[in-house]
Image (cartoon, rainbow, N blue to C red; front, side, top):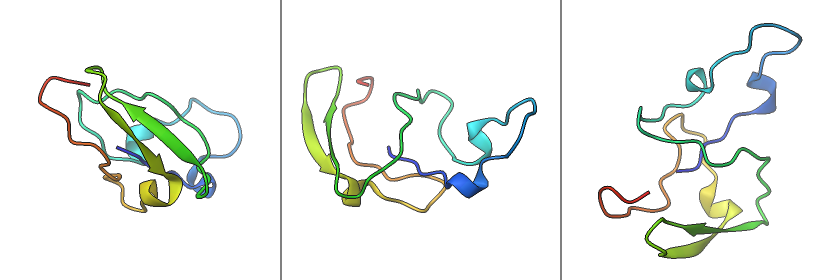
Length: 79
C-alpha cells in the first residue's frame, strides 16, 4: 500500500514525536518499508518476497485516503 502524509500535517518544532498511525490507517501486522517524498512522474519497482513484482507510476500510487492505496494483492503470508 501507498500512504501520503501532507507536509503541513506533520507537527512543527521539537517535542516527543507523533506516531504515524495518527495520520494513516494501516493494519497491526503491516511493516513500513520506505518513507520518501512522492513525485507523480516517478516510477517504482514493487517486488514481493516470492519474487513477483511490477512497476507502478507515482500517479497511480497517489491517494488522499487515510487507508492508503492498495497496489498489490499477493497471496496470504507473502510480504
